[in-house]
Image (cartoon, rainbow, N blue to C red; front, top):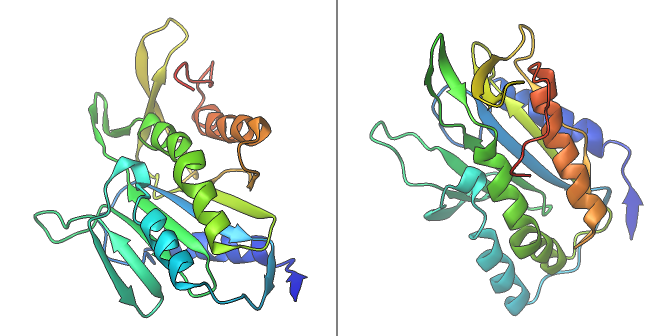
Length: 227
């Protein structure tokens, strides 16, 4: 029996606050990050998955690629099942996906940054936008279906640790430039997205949410041509 959980948005906000405070599931480098939580709107008891369903779910789970980074390692941890990228030279992880026992899913990726004078920590939104849009119908929607998550299911996407960073976008004259993230916008939470299979409204809502980030940074024409 499933019950509507009015606190699922609160749970997403609480977890975002934890992530913004350095509460990632595994040690990651400092700097801007992209995060996505996949949360059902209902709570309750779940039917056990069959062996074949579980294998299908794990196969899809391991295909998740936060900011297009492959997850090469998978192991059980206290919080659930953790898949993560190969550690860098400092032993730090740049992307992971966490599968919780209650079938919530969390993905976090470190945004690649570089120098774009005078900015010293510039990043491109397309690094998370394009791969995520490509994975929605090929990986994420089938995974939600296999897991038999009680609908509706929402995506809570956020950008974390944005202080002293800038995003790269086209300026009013057509050339790319760096737009500093406004002071006080260390965290940007996008509007929740209802997952609805191959529905075009869902994809349009995702693109509109992605455009919010450029708008927050003061981009005059916030819609990216590649979306």
